[in-house]
Length: 331
View 1 (cartoon, helix red, strand yellow):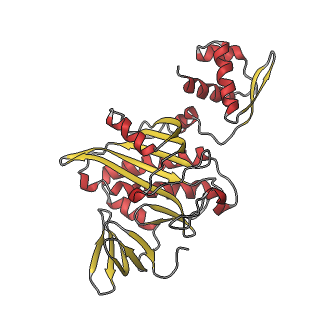
View 2: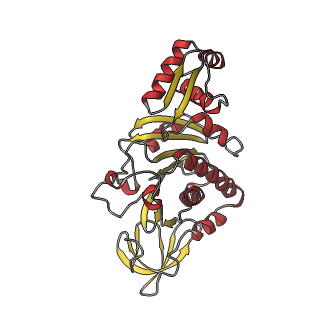
View 3: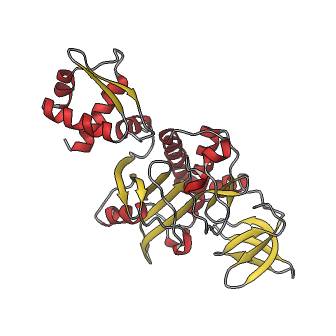
């Protein structure tokens, strides 16, 4: 058993103990490792913020936990999902999307989930940098292998947007809104961004990486000063912190349900669900793409294009660009 798996199992046993203390002997027998190995993993848990008491003749007792995500507990919470979600944890990597793509290229199965405590080169849309401080947010990328033509892959962006919005509402009670094509807003400020990347050939999709960055407990001081648009975190919006594991469980469960719906019924119910979180239908917007123009939002096409009636009366299918309300809905 690898060290990270041993740590996770020890943590799970300590969390589940109804006696408070778990003896070193019990841990050794349950995990099939030596007392020295148990002690080593206990020390590593302490180094990342877990407070674990050691009392002679009684054993170990977990008295305080940081906001870490535990693989065993996560797997148990997702046991009844349609997909067999397989979490892969890393402390610090350049990008969860890039790592997930590497795993997918090597045969990583559908349902692989890459989670990082910190990213050194987090990616946003159009090559923009995604600020990724350690221990406060969710940086997660999932491998999917849908049997769809490449032209339909952008539909999965809207699927993941709905999953994030539903998870945020469920866990925090906040009222998120979606911003076309791939942002989640709270009170007009960006709280999450999505970056979905595809590997495909003409005849079909090899894999799609669903990348999600969700600002959970980030403080104002952790945001860079040169943001293109105002940003926030769930903690700043609500005035209190939230457990990242609960948000991740809710996110993956909603994603699982929506992906199953998409595979059985196609994009129509996903588009309808996305529009229920979108508050700009009928509003005048400015679109900055190959050109900049203004018009009125009509809705979302099934392929993900934003339908806009230009001020000159012509209809437009917007496939890429930045969209902002003409009258300040966003700060």
